[in-house]
Length: 122
Image (cartoon, rainbow, N blue to C red; front, side, top):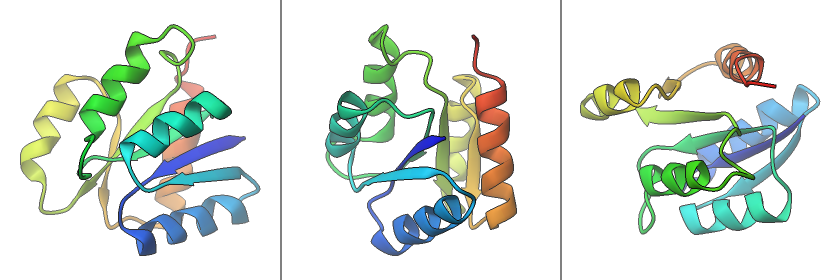
């Protein structure tokens, strides 16, 4: 499965890439929203893990851009929220977007990927 991981903290990006690759997934990484949209345009992923708090183009802008394009609207996106960002949880939940609160385990990440892809309409 092709997975895009977007996070501006390189140590987190590397860890998630390692966990997903170890599980046999083809992983692409992006450090900001603009790079994420470029990566999606180059090769649409089966799922995106998107950091909720990024500089410049934030995750909500990225998500809105993806949802407005028929070619990318159905790609499942799992938001990654830092533990201290509890204020962002209601907005994500209201938008119906699945999310994980960091830190989380490798098993939790892989389970979230499985759920996100299983919930994708055919």
